[in-house]
Image (tube, rainbow, N blue to C red; front, side, top):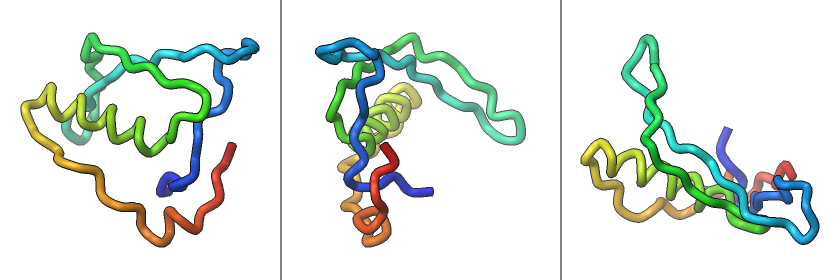
Length: 87
């Protein structure tokens, strides 16, 4: 399922005012096991951050750890533009 182009992070901390949260980054190995390997890096996200932008940022960090450049994110497809956000 593609991520909606308008999907934004909700208040994940439950605090008012919302505070930024942190996620741990993982690399996943090859099939068939796809074992997860913690990269030893974290990434912050906050209320109102665009989910696709943060997903691309995380993808870029994992690819950088592998030594693979990723370039710029692709523009949203018509499907991603049409999907309503789920939060």
